[in-house]
Image 1 (cartoon, rainbow, N blue to C red):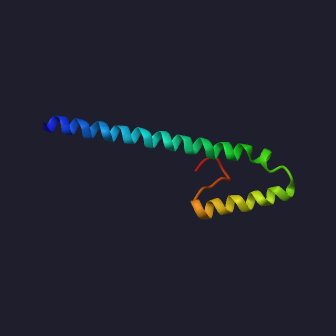
Image 2: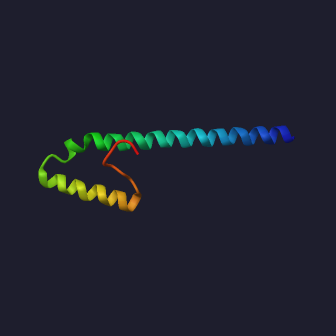
Image 3: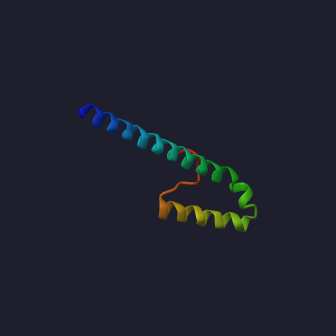
Amino acid sequence: MFVFVTGGLYGGIRYVDKKKDEAKDKYHAIRCEIVDKSKDLWKEPAQWRDRQRVFEMMKKEFDLNLYHENK
């Protein structure tokens, strides 16, 4: 019985760890996409200033640094 419980716990931990890594990879991909497309999304100089405000708000509210791809 102990072996089955231990095996089940080990499998559960591996499953949760795999899901965590997948979520982290998706999060990083979305951040990189926003950084890459920022020049296309905010083309005008006035829009570029709005981009600055959006990025500052995201950093303050959600602790997301969208200025650079790397953390």
